[in-house]
Structures are given as C-alpha cells and as structure tokens.
Image: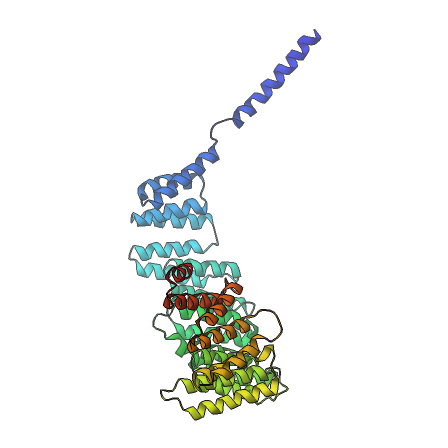
Length: 460
C-alpha cells in the first residue's frame, strides 16, 4: 500500500508539472515570433520591399503600438505614398501618447510629403507654441524637426526652448550646430561667441567645433567670418582672454604668423608665461618659411634676457632662421655668411659645448663646410659635438649625418658610409634612421655596390 501511495503522489506531481513544462519546450512562443517578424520586416524595408514590410508592421502595430512598430509602418506608408493612412497612423500614435509632440512633427511631415504645406505649417507652429519647459523633450523635438528636413523649425524650437528654460539652459551649442547645418555661418559664429561670453571656460570645446566646421566649409568662407566677428568683439572687450586665444588659434590656422605673434605676445605679457606660446608661433613660422614673423618672435624671447628659461631656444631658433633667410636668397652674400658664422661662434663661446648646444655646432659646421669652404673646421666642430658625453640621441645622430655628408663632399666614401650605418643601426624604426639608410643606399649604388644598395632600398 505504501508503495502504491508513493506512485500516486508522483503521478499527481507529474500531472501538475506537465502543462508548465510543455509551455517551456514550445518551439517558439509568441514574443519570439513577434521579434522574428520584426527582423523580417526590417530586412524587407532595407531591401526596399515596402509593401511586405508594411503588411508585417501594420499587423504588429495593431497588437503592440510600440515606437519601433509605428516607425517602420509609417516609413513604409510614406515610401508607398499612402499619405491618408500615414496621417491616420500619426494621429493615432499621438492620441496613444498624449503630450509627446514628436508625433505631431511626424504628422506635419506627412503633410509636407503630400504637398499640403499650409496644413504642415499649422501643425509645426502648434508644436512650437505648445513646447514644454523640459530640456529632454525640447532636444527631442528639435531633433525630430531636423531629421525630417526642417532645420528652420529645429532652430525655432531651440529659440523657444531658451525662453522657456529661463536661463537654466541656453541651447547655444545646439543652436550654433543647427545654424552650421543650415549653412548660416555668421549666425553660428555669433551664437558660439555669445556662449563663450557667458561660459568662457568652454573655449576649447567651441574651438574644436569651429575646427570641425571649417573642415566641412567647402567654399572656405568661415575663417573670414570668424575673424571679422572676433576682431569686432575684441575691440569692444580687449580684456576677454578667450577672444585673444581664439584669435591666436585662428591666425595660426590661416598661417598669419605675424598676427599670431601679436596675440601670443599679448597673452604672454598678461600671464607672464616666459614666452612659451611665442616660441610655438616662432617654430611654426620657421616651419612655414615665414622668416620675418619667426625672427620677430625669437627676438621677443631674446629680449627677456639671458636668465629667461627659453633664452637658448630663442637664440638657436633665431640663428637657424637667419641662416635659412640668407640661404634662401638667389645670390648668397659671403659677407652675410661670415657674420652669421661669427654669431654662432659667439653663442657657442657663451654657452659652451654641451648637449643643449649640439644643434648650434651642427648648424655652424654646415655653414662652414658648404658656404665658407672651411671643411676642416666643420669636421672639428662636428667631432666635438658627437663626443659630448651622454646617451645616443637624435641630436647626435643629426651631427653624424651632417659629418657623413661633409666626408662624402670631400670624397671620403667609406668614412661617410660608416657614419650612415651607425645612425641606421641605432635608429632603425625612426625617420632619421630611414634617412640614413636611404643616403647609404644611394651612396653604395653610385660606388658600384649595386646588390647591397638594392637590398637597402628594398627595405625602405
């Protein structure tokens, strides 16, 4: 009897569990079927099979009026030009989601597509009129306008939103971006500058956005518009640091290094920065062969005196700029080179032979060897520079390449190739190492080591 009772209890338990278990092992339950239908419908939409897509999402929407089901049903209707059905759908979705004005934007868009412009305008104006004082919803509605090709209404949304938020949030960044998308660069610039007037610490963010906008400005009108607006505001408020910094940045973008120097000098004097910004401008000017601006900038650094932390940098840059300026002339005057040699010798005497003066020694050697026929002196100076104690460095490698060039100029081929090889080996993965390998490759080619030269050039 006891065994029979156990069997009966077990049977009842299994009977109770069986329906639940059968539900769990059903091949596809209803939610899974709907998700599969959604995926199929989206695939149809992507394949431009809009009727098939609409059939699926119309059915899904009737069962579950989610935003996704609504959106694909609406887009399919629009593609099929079923505007009356689209109108009914947007009204129904709006009724089901009271207070969500983005569905009114959809209704207006349906009217735009069906060429009922007056109706669309009434709907859009109603959306603006009924905007809530809610940051998230204002952004959402502006985005809905923009995505439906209505940037003017997106701008009106942000402008009305600014009034509704009563100083809590200005939407100036969003407005400026919308002006840019609408091609209105002047309003974009003014809005950004108004924002900086209120929040000057946002300068880097605004600067990055302006940089991006300039990259998209095919006609290159934005830089001049920005410069004009900045100068007007700077004249009105010369104490505004963010205007100084933006003018410096813009002048560098436009490669107006003389004006950039003026701005950098102003900031340097205001904040007593020891000339770091001015040095940046000087180096950029030299790199772009604007020798006058570079010399003016380096002279400012030198005017700070020998105790200034950037004095030696300024002196090296000044002498290098002066050399390039002289060498760039069609007729190079020997007297000018002799004066420059004296200036280099004076600088080396003043600061001594050390790691920081390696560049001075190298530049001096170049002038002596290739302009003044003083190859022996040049070799002595480079040998002195290379022998300076310290780790292997790019500066030392440059001296070795310069010395190799002079040896080659003198016909000392093997001395030259030895030095090129040293730099190549020490800086295999650096540009200077590649430069040395290339020079060595061409050298060996010209002296008849064709196979070895080919191997070196193949590597490059």
